[in-house]
Structures are given as C-alpha cells and as structure tokens.
Length: 559
Image 1 (tube, rainbow, N blue to C red):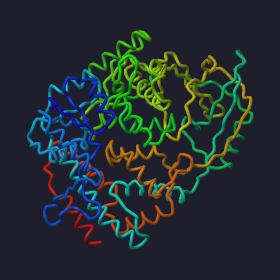
Image 2: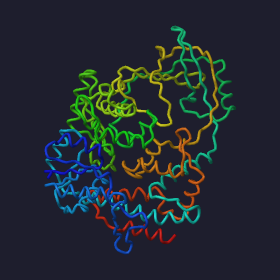
Image 3: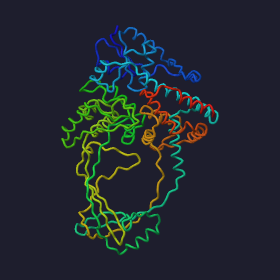
Image 4: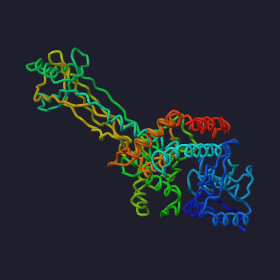
C-alpha cells in the first residue's frame, strides 16, 4: 500500500514529480479529462436548472479502473492537476470518480515543477476550489448550449458535419470583418517631399522631410500641391531654424503571459500557436538536464499575469549584476491587466542559473529556441532602460519647414539581451546620426525628391495579431487562444497565406449565417461580458447562476 497517491494530468509531469518525492509515494496520470458531457446529445438539462450530465469519456474505462484500484490501495490521495480552471475541474471529476468528499483536503498545485516547489506544495494541500470549478463548468455548459443551437442551422443551410462555437465563431467574425474592410478600402493619395542636404563645413549629408508652412503642419494630397511648393523653394536658401537635443528611454517589455509568448514565438520563431503551447508544456512538465536532473524549466505556461515572485526577482538581480554590471539592473514591477486572473506568475525560467546555452545539448532545437526566448525576455524585464540621445532639427526655406531627426544609442541597457518585436512592422532603424549642426547655419540642397504614396488597408490578421485582438477585446482566456485559432483553421473556416489569416468561402458563408441568425451571440460585447461573468464566478463575486444561460437559451430558441 502506498502512503500517498498523487494524480496529475500527464505522464511526463508524473515522472518528474515522482523523482522529487521518493519514499512510498506513487504518481500516476489521468491523461487529461476523465469525464465530460456526452457527444451524442446536448447533455444539459435545460428545464432542470441547466444541470450538466457528465459521463465517463469513452476509451478511459481501463484507466478509471486503474485509478480506483490505486486510490483504494493508498493511505491518502492528492489531486495535483494543472493550476487553472480546467485543472480544478479535472480534480473535481477525479474526486467524484474516486469517492473523495468535496470538502476533503486533497488538492495540490504547482506553479513550477521544481523539487523545492513540489515538496513545499505537498506540505500545504487544500480543498478543491468549487468556485473555480463552477467557472469552468459554466463555460462548458454555455459552450455546449451554443454549439447545439447553432450547428443545426449550418447543417440545414450549408452541409452536415459543420459545427460552431461561442468563441471560435467570434474569432472567425473578426477575420471575416477584417477581410471585408480590406475589400471595401479605397486608397487615398498623399505626398511627401524629401530633401538631401549637405553641411558645407563637414561635407556630410543628411535627409529631411517636408513638414509645413509658417510653423503649421501641412498634408499634401496631390501633385499640384507639391509642384506649387517646389516652385516656391526652387531658388530658396535653406537655413537651420531650430535644434532640440534631448534623451529618451526605451523600457523593457514585461515577462511573458500566454498571449505575449504566443505572439513573440510566432513573430520571432515562426511557431504556430499549437506548436508553441506544446513545447511550453514540455518545458513546464520536466526535462532532464545535467545540473538538476529531471526538472521543469519554466513556470506554468497558461497565465495572463506579469507578476513575478520575489525569489525570482532576486535571482534575476544577482545574474544581471554578475553578467552585465550594476548599472544594467533595475528593480521593475509590472502592472497586470485589470481583467487578468493573476492566479500565478508570468512565464519565466524556474532556475536563472540554467542559461540557455548551458543546457542546449539536452533540448531539441525548438525547445531551445523557446526556452531562450522565455529566459531572455524574463532577464531583460529586470534590466535598465536603453538610453538614446536624440536631436530634432527644423530647416526653413521661404516660409516652408523641413524636419530632420537623429538618434544615437548612448546606453544599450536591456537591449543587450532582448528587444520585443511588433506584428506587421519592420524592425526600426535604431540609429540615425546627423552632423553637428548650428542654429542659423545654411545648408546646401543636394537633391529634392517628391514621393507619391497611397494609404493602405488594415493588415490581415496573423495568428499573433489575432491573439492580441482577442485578448484586447476580452474574448477567451490564456487557455483558449491556441485551441480557438487551431480549431477554426482545422475546420477550414480560415486558412493561412504565408502568415496571414484569410477567410475561406466556407468561413464567409458560415459567418454570414451565424450573424444573421444569432446576432446577439456572435458579437464581441456579449462574448467579453460572458468572460467577465466566468471570472466573477471563479472569484466568488457571483454565484453560478443561470441567468446568462437562460438569456442565451431564449435568444437561441427564438431564431
């Protein structure tokens, strides 16, 4: 008989944790959910207060028998599923299957899978958090009702086998709406005038662009406007009118959340969301490294918090001062978004001493790339700002103003290690040096170049920018971004062209039908409002009432 039986979700996590505990302790995996709503029917009693009808998942019979046998042979059972709503729900289902009372002190969670954290967590078990479980159940029930009311419309109007989901359908709508914006976009003409100047004393050249007249900014929309200006300044003298020198700081980005990790891995590494989350799961659950044995290399990868523990902050400080010097360190705290659940920390390395290069040989190429990204982002988040010397120069000619801007990097700070990228933007030119110009100095025009341009439509979404949009609009949560986008790609509602997401004809038809029949549901505001309700249930600010489900059912039934 085992003294302790610990049930986790995955075999990899089980193997890692077992090595930390030793003794007469057994660790086994539930392989994710063991109970769910049936696939063959709605499984929600609409008339009976929306009570869900859970059944054992098909194919898990032998596993459930094993779990029951091991639990019966253990003095104490601990449920150590993942530290989020889904994990809390799995723990609750396991308790039901194993006849563990709801108020039993049996729940253990690990934000990171290290020996110290696991051993400490085992000293402080708690009861299953029924509020967090209720939040997951409310989502599951609501999603089932939505799916069962929407999908038959698609079967009737398009073809059988199609399906719709509450969050996925809104994500498809965002992509379709963006495509319609692009198709309806009418480009507008605009012009600029670029002038290359020569400083006579140094023989150095620099470029300036047209700003306006008599100190007021002017926008140019036609060749006629440009030609009029060119005529006015054809024989003019150019003089330095004003020089402003200053410094500006660039501060580091905070530690990764699920969303920002997915975005950066997409931009910098070209990873899909699904690939990023799979690799992050491996890094979290445990990998064998020479210095530590089998250990989780990063903290839990489903989080919308940027909070960092004081221990991790202290480790980063020590590392930065040793590697770069005291002037590179700055103690930084980051504000977590007001809608964040903040259940655990931002994503960071569990051991700062495990630098990416030192364990490169034990990781796959992709694991190394993602670990390095997470590691550098975290360390940089605690480093000093980069400092630029900037200069802004006004050049005047016959009442017209041209502007030239320069900047030089004085102190690299965090940029020594990591610079955040931006979606749909080219890398910024960090340095642009101007000659040492003086007020009232005359400069010589070498070349003048008018340039015609046209406004561009909004860019198509990429996986990264769609995740950002979902997060900003309050649609979904860290655990849902990847499966949401993966699902609508697999259903062929959207497809990729290079990295861009484009709606298919099927996606457009499905979106049109759902918006036409369920406009109260397929909208951003409703979906965001529901997410807030789930948060309130988890935080015990709201009971798991059925008001929103009733509203939804009424809306659906009337279509």
